[in-house]
Image 1: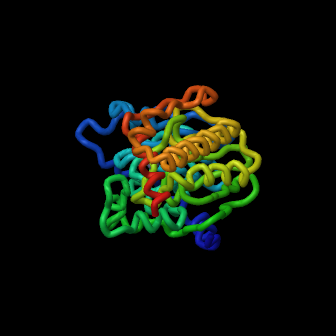
Image 2: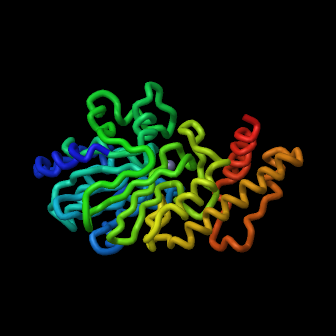
Amino acid sequence: MRRTVLLGLLLTSGGLLIGAAACGPDGPPPVPAIEQVRGDLYVIQGGDPTDRATFSGGNVAVYVMDQGVAVVDSKLPGYGQQIIDQIRTVTDKPILAMFHTHTHNDHAGSTPEFPDTIEVITHENIKASLTREECLPVTNCQTFKGENARYLPQTTFSEKASVWFGDDRIDLYHFGPAHTNGDTLVVFPAERAMHSGDMFSLKRPPFIDTNNGGSGLEYPETLAKTAAGIQGVDTIIPGHTPGFFTWAELEEYAEFHRQFVAMARAAHAAGKTAEEAAEEYVIPDEFEGYNRSDPMRIPTNIQTIYDELEQ
Ligand SMILES: [Zn+2]
C-alpha cells in the first residue's frame, strides 16, 4: 500500500464533486435511500439481482471519516450521480477513495462517474481484470477504457492492507479465489463491520466466475480462511442481500460450501455427470433460508468443480 499517495490525496481533494451518470432519457431506476449501518458506516442497497426494475447493482458501503468519505463499490454503470446524491444527504465531506470488492460491472460499473480526484484502491487481480484488452461479459474492463483509464486502480494490494488510522482505519483482506480471484473483504474495525462483496452475496450457490479466476474447489477454503482470519466483526454488508448477515452466518456459508464441494467430489468419484449430481442434490435442512438460485447454477457449479478436479 502506497500510503504516501493516499496522504497526498487527503490534502488536495477538497474540490467540488461532479458526477456524470450515463443514463437513458428517463435515467436508471432510483436507488433506495442511504441507510445507517452503524456509527459512521452507511449502505445504499442494490435491489434484487433478478428484478431489472429495481436492480442497481451491488450494495454500496459509504464510510464517513474525519477528512472525507470512502466508498466500497459503485453499482452498475449509470449510478454515479445517484450514489453521490445519496452520500450528500449524510455528509458534505469530499469523496476520497473507492474500493472494489471485485471486478464485476454491477460492483465497479459507475466508478468513472465519480470525481477524478478519487483514489481507486483494489486487489492487484482486480486491476489486472479491469485492464484486460478483451472484455468478457461481466469483466467490466470496457468501463475503464480510453479517458476512463484514469479510474483504473492507482493503488493495489495482494493479501492485506490498512488505509487511514485510528477510528477511520479500513482493512482490506484477500484470502484466495472464490467468486473471482480478486475477492476483497473490506473491514471497518471501529464499526465492527465488513463488506463481503459477492464472496458472500446471498444464501444460495454463487456465480463462480472462472473467466476471472474464481474457484469452486477453493471457495470453501477461502471462506474458512476469512472466518478464521478476521476478528471483531459482527455486521456483514453482503454483496446483494437486502439487510445484513452476522459472523455466524458467514461461518454457516463456509460450511455450506464445504459440504457442497464434498458432495461434488463424491459424485465425481462415483462417475456421475454434473447434471445427475445436481438432480440428486438437496440443500441440507440445517441451511435455513437457502435456495437453489437459478436452475442452471447448481449443475454449472458442480461442473466447475469437476473441471478443477480434472486439471
Ligand atoms: Zn460479482
